[in-house]
Length: 412
Ligand SMILES: Cc1cc2nc3c(=O)[nH]c(=O)nc-3n(C[C@H](O)[C@H](O)[C@H](O)COP(=O)(O)OP(=O)(O)OC[C@H]3O[C@@H](n4cnc5c(N)ncnc54)[C@H](O)[C@@H]3O)c2cc1C
Image (cartoon, rainbow, N blue to C red; front, side):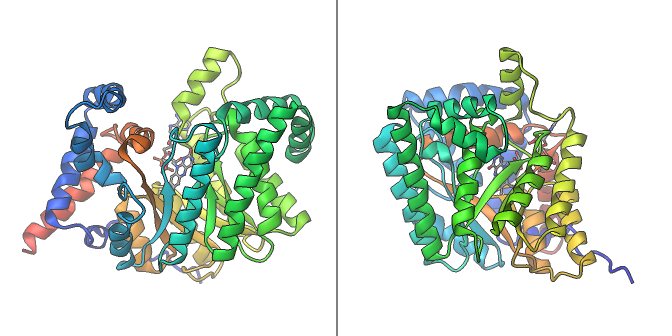
């Protein structure tokens, strides 16, 4: 007999139970504002400048609006209030130290490494923080990653073969620099393994991604033998990633490690397309949203089918993809709480998915960034852009908030 999927994302009482009326009102105001393209465009241009010039009240306005919606706090300690609140509803946390563009120079990268380790130490003391995330651009000079990526693209053979060829072509200074990047990553992974906190490596721009993938796979080969310490991120808006997933799986089976995979659609689509046009190379991005959706869902199905060698994080706000994953779990007669299948949404978005999955018993988390306001600006800009279409995510968020506000009014 086919079992029906008991999960629905319509229950707004569960979705917003953690928000007081005032907080719900503030979220409504914010999503309404983000639905105005002229305001978003102005904000995207002026905010970085206002921060740079220390314009009065800028930080206060950001802190009380978009920052409090999408970010856990300015310090690690400040995230505790949000994490504890989520814990009350069986929602876990992926803690993200938002250093994007914040770290620079060797000292900066060493400092970031210390910060990442502080996050791991802290997460290990908490009930509901099993994961933390790392951006390799917080550990390495962007130009060095770009150079290795270019060399790898000119090479032939498997990812690892091209990686080794590329590393062999670096000059002595670059080679030493890359050695320091590897040591930073190794240190983070060693501490994470000893503290039983998993490390999720974020995916960034395609023109630096090959060395990130190679480094991550090397770490998995080392640390993912019995449990999953390291996860790589695959962006399915890239048309080559489904095949890459299959190649990684083959490597994991051959080398006998657990392939940790976080599936996302991808956050840098416009930059990717613009660069491809500007530099006259074929775009790495799928031809349409439908093609991205198709590959994302195929990747989910592939991971669930091969769950013996894979640990999966379904990281999406797409209701259909989340429903597909739960339907496949039910079809395979897996429990909804599965130690190898986890769901995640960004803090401040799609509470209807997160809290209804938690209510149904799934393992689910919020991706919770923290950091000084000036350092999380690039992250906030991406959230503003992503939520700027009333027809898309914003419309959905607003509809749900309005439904819950009405429900609370009727029920007193
Ligand atoms: C927990 C978590 C971690 C994340 N980590 C990362 C990360 O490490 N790296 C990263 O890049 N992103 C990351 N993201 C963001 C993610 O990539 C998406 O930007 C975001 O989640 C929106 O996609 P969706 O699947 O939620 O929703 P949907 O609304 O279904 O999809 C929107 C996405 O579809 C794609 N898309 C839209 N239009 C088109 C088109 N015309 N052609 C092709 N594709 C199109 C784009 O990727 C767009 O963001 C993360 C998201 C979550 C929830």
